[in-house]
Length: 364
Image (tube, rainbow, N blue to C red; front, side):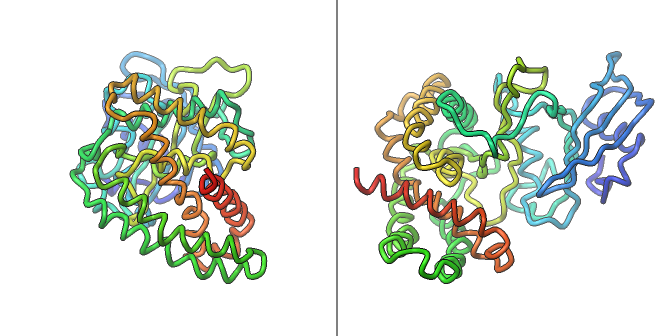
């Protein structure tokens, strides 16, 4: 199915489009007799549950599928999420991904060249079995599972050759990233005013000076580098609801919504994902209690997948080097004047937690 046939809205999602989408990705002669589109709230896409009655390849179709629709003109690298489900982790057993029934979009385009390219995904509907983690305090078992899930993905795309699109100039990638994120520093400091004391204000400035350069040095030799998810925040982490044992199409933990921007780091130290997943969102007490468990789960997954030349001590050093990412997540909101005000309820807490983490490790 050509990219030009990506619906502009849910109003264009009908029996013919769903049939063509499934047929274009290997479902022989799908026959859909009924379709009902149930819109679902989504922050960075248009989403819906599709209620279906039909069959394909002689078997009944699932009664529901989850449609994620990103028409052309958005700010993301559109080929990234298509590749996430159809290319990057093909062959990885028990990958922490949602089953993808169909992906329509830029399959043959380099991710870096796909800004604003439209795409659509028909995914397994995990609404009944899974929930996101934005309001669930992380337990030790969750921290270990989260680390293991990221480790499984990273091990499959490990090293400087981990991006199927080709090699990266890590220095240039970091400079591009900081060129965007760094624009948020002064607006954030100005917005905080006297709410941030001189010591923490100075420490934040050093994050964007000394700490990011330490991280750069750690990344340069390529050890610990992997293809990243890039935004494994708790909303993008789906876990089984209490009492649910799982369903076909959904492992115990799924990482969703890989939607990088042109300025995002896509190949970098894997610990960047670990920091991003935890430091800005977990309370300081929870982070102190769970960070080693998170790292242990990650390292065990790497070792189990055959990454045997990355000792745990190096992982801890890379975690420490990437702690600046927690503060950068918060500072980035300041690069957009509207977000600086409208998202203050989020970024101010993120920044407080991140600075506490950085300063905790300063004292070690």
